[in-house]
Image (cartoon, rainbow, N blue to C red; front, side):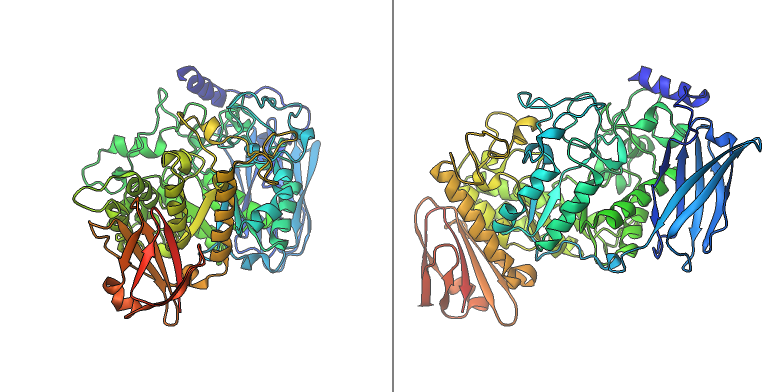
Length: 618
């Protein structure tokens, strides 16, 4: 790694090798729109010795070339354009002139903006999210499994290789996902990841403006978003502002030494997230957390570089405007410069007020997760504009409680007390709750393949406050026994490839238990989709009593109530309803959504061993 960083430094001090006779190889962003609130756009122009050209903009009403910025590498220019409200759609003419003899014209598109794009509705607590790793879901187009010019070829026999899933596969599966009751899709990164190996996961971006051709094209992704929208579904795009891939095109020819965070020798982030507020933290620990690299193959981007910051903000706005996505999941949210992340999030929310972004802060302490949510008053004065976060504390507590044996206290205590810390969050209803995701063991494996615990977990996720997210294959008990290898956790979805012996779409080859799980998820999520009380109702839960191992929670408003009962006992239990009188009254009349059992003026109810109930109270 020392050699790599040394080479990067040398490249900055010398002219790069020729990239062809054309002086302009790239202009990013490739276009912009009129009518955007973000109307001062910085174009990155890349080409051999491009800084030796003078640049002018032909007269265009409402558009001004405000600044031409040079950087140490003469193969880059940064052009600042101001687009006023009176500008009209069309093509700007940028003239690059050298020695008054050599002139190159670049036509830059200014597009008409869809007037409704600014009102795009983001995901919210009325949604249920289906998470997909695109390479491992469905192979809808076998013709793009291997693409000439890209380093890694398809090899389905290799657990860490490219398997062929793509955007068309997701399009083909929209009806299946909708039928399960999901209203939104979160797709792991789909941008070009032209790395030598392990490129399928998508988190080592090599082109921020291009869908990986092995998934499809920019146009096919845009079509997916439209088709999903036409079916009443939202698409959430996975983004990364912290790092890129080592084989990103600019890594061999950086604009400036501070484009990425460089060290005398390879230095990895320390992952010490407490340094943000720690009054005793050393400066080096603070710096290493933010500026250290994730892994050697993922250079750490320096968002304190003004042009890098603009590049990342513009890239995000471009994808929202271009594709019509309804949300973003931001990877490793705390790791980039935190003041940049505030600016980035604010820019998105200013442009799209109804949009939503969920940040990944993988830590199991609500005190740390809550730091990042919009509305939090932090001791150091930090202001965040991030609406949503992944609720890792609740996920951890759920698994702990389900696997824990009762001692002097109920095994539900961890879950009960973690939810009880919601006072730390400005908006707990905007947290994303989940049993598992693409970076951890499958929930069925985490629960030691206990089907009853699996159903308890999913019932809780579907009824607690927040926005539920389920990983593809959870509905058919996909698992990763004996290993935490990500290639196994992200195994191919059965039926997503031609001639698969098991097909989850048709039910062919599924075991009775897998079919039961699929039916359970379908019933649960379709019920949730139509239950406005679960979307926005208040929540009340009761401290689990040590002797009965039953956890009871209510969702309610002024008119309706839902009673959720989770029983971890290995025998049927009779539940006395007196302890819930303050919300339930003297008796219960209602119907269990899951079993269909009806209750009339009941004072006690029977709860099945290791069973869950969702009772709509009349």
